[in-house]
Image 1 (cartoon, helix red, strand yellow):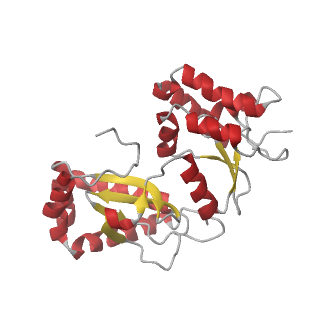
Image 2 (cartoon, rainbow, N blue to C red):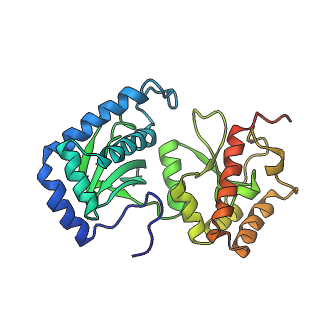
Length: 284
């Protein structure tokens, strides 16, 4: 089986089906109840720490934070399991069962983080888009409607639908364009964003040697002349007057240099992106 991308949904193999049937299905409602109790503990921590998202209170828009917090706590507990559900999960994982954080497009409507436990979809942030939904949902993965982002077009389609975003080719930061080829402008966001800085999408751009990125940079709409990133360090700004060509050439240079297989290059580009987020607002 090819190596999975970070947070990619794992295939429901016969082994995973057998392990799920042996270890998880006998838990019955206890698995749901335990996840619900752990979610309440996560809420007690995060609800006081996180600001409103898009002007709406917690838990709206916080699927990533909730899922990561829950997953981290669950992994820590499985190292010394005490609760019967945790003991079963530890045995399941010990036999090779998947317990992964996954990310994708849910029912072709919005991006969603969840957990994959063998052949089960375990959504511990089910109420972060429609806040009246139950906080936890558990379904067979194949019936959940969660699918991997297929390509850059699938990502753009979902971002436009879910975020209400207007998307442009990243001609603002050419050196980051191979990994982050999209500039997004979303309602309620004060500054544009570069998409997508999640590990899955970064690795999806690397997997095809930046060809998808280059095609979008060539054919996508350019940012309006007055669209700027206020924290853009001087050394990351375009060096020429043809930022479109410069962004495309960044993909070609990365491809020629074997950057798709160069971990150090990836780390350096992500560090540049994080520096962009932390720089003081640039003066005109």
